[in-house]
Image (cartoon, rainbow, N blue to C red; front, side, top):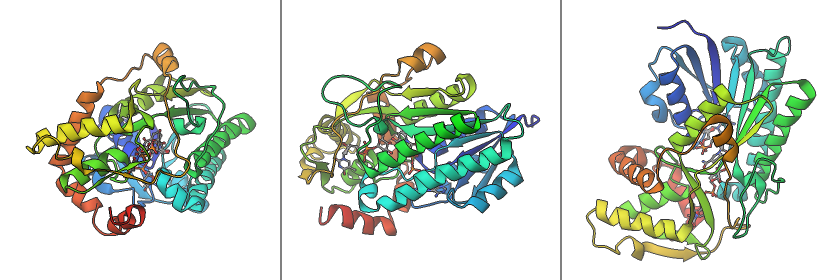
Amino acid sequence: MSAIEKTILVTGGAGFIGNHVVRRLVRNYPQYKVVNLDALTYAGNLENVADVADAGNYSFVKADITDLEAIRSVFAVYSPDVVIHLAAESHVDRSIEDPLLFVKTNLLGTATMLQVAKEAWQADFSGKLFYHVSTDEVYGSLGTEGFFVEDTPYDPRSPYSASKAGSDHLVRAWGHTFGLPVVLSNCSNNYGPYQFPEKLLPLFINNIRHLKPLPVYGKGINVRDWLYVEDHARAIDDILHKGSVGETYNIGGHNEYRNIDLIHLLCKLMDKKLDRREGTSANLITYVTDRAGHDMRYAIDATKLKEELGWTPSLKFEEGLDKTIDWYLDNEDWLEGVTSGAYQAYYDKMYGGN
Ligand code: NAD
Ligand code: DAU
C-alpha cells in the first residue's frame, strides 16, 4: 500500500451521493486515507459502502455533525487535511414536515464542522480545504427561460433550500472572516444507484415494480435538470484537485425534463424491462396534491466548470436512466431492505392511501 499523503474526511458518506464520492476516492487514490463520517440516519446505510469497507485506506466513524465534542474527537483522532461536507437532511418533502430538523442539521451541523476545522487548522491553513457540497435549489425557481450561474442571487423557497442557502453563507463567512480555505459547488438533481426511494426516480421505480400508484405532484409540469450521480462525484473530484480556493462551481447535466415527460419515459422503459404490456406502468400515474411551495424549474449553467476545469457530463440521460433502472432491478434486496420498517410509516403519512 502507498504511503498516505493526506486524510480526507467525507461527511454523509453513507448517503446517496456520499457513497459514490467515498468509493471514487478510496479506489482512485490509494495515497489518501478516506474517513467516512455519518450519523446513519434513515438516509444513511453502510451497505452503500460495503464494497470498500475492507480497503486499507478507508475508515468509518459514526458521529453526528451537530455534536461539537464528537466532531472535535474525530479531528483529534484522524487529523484530516480536507473535509468534503455532504451530510445533510436532503429531502424537500421532509423539510415541509419537520423544518427544525433541517435547520439543526444543515445550519448547526455545518457551523460545527466549520468551527472544528478552523480550530484544528488555524495554526497553518496551508494544504487544508473545506469543500461544501450544495444544491442549485439555493437560487430559487426559474420561469421558462434562463439558467442559474454562480452569481445568481440566492432566493431559496423551501425549508430545505433555505437551510442549504444558510449553510453556504456560513461556509463563505468562515472563509472570509477566519481565512478558512473553502470551496463550494451547487449541483442539480442527481439520479443513479443507492438513492433512497423517497426521491422521484427510485420511488417511482419501486412503485412500478409493485404495480403501485405513481403520485405525480400537481400537473407534473415542473422541470428538473438531471445528472448521473457518478458524474457528480467526478466533478467533486475535479474541483477538489483543480478548483481554486474561495470559488463556487455550478454542476449540472444540461438535461432538463418536465416531470411528466420523464415519468412517461421511465414507464416505457420499465414496461419493456419487466416484459409487461406497453401502457401498464403509465396506467399507474396518479395526479396528487402539489408539494407546498413547489419550485417550477431548475436549470444549471455549468460553463465555468467546463471552461476552467474541463468537466462535462459523461452519460446521455437515456443511457444513465437505463443503467439506473437495471441497478434497482438487480438490487431488489437493497430496495427491500431500505423500504422495510420505518419506510412504510413515512409512505403512508406522505401519500395516504395511494
Ligand atoms: P442523502 O439524504 O442521501 O444522504 C445524507 C447523508 O447524511 C446520510 O448518509 C445521513 O445519514 C447523513 N446525515 C444526516 N444527518 C446527519 C448528521 N446530523 N450527522 C452526520 N451525518 C448525517 O443525501 P444526498 O442526496 O446524498 O445529498 C448529499 C449532499 O448533496 C447534501 O448536502 C445535499 O444537499 C447535496 N445535494 C444533493 C443533490 C441530490 O440530487 N440528491 C443535489 C445537489 C446537492
Ligand atoms: O436540485 C437539487 C435537489 O434535487 C437536491 O438538492 C435535493 O436534495 C434533491 O432531493 C432534489 O430535490 P427535488 O425536490 O427536485 O427532488 P425530488 O426527487 O423530491 O422531486 C423531483 C421532482 O418530482 C419535483 O418536481 C417533485 C416531483 N415529485 C417528487 C416526488 C417524491 C413528484 O411529482 N412526486 C413525488 O412523489
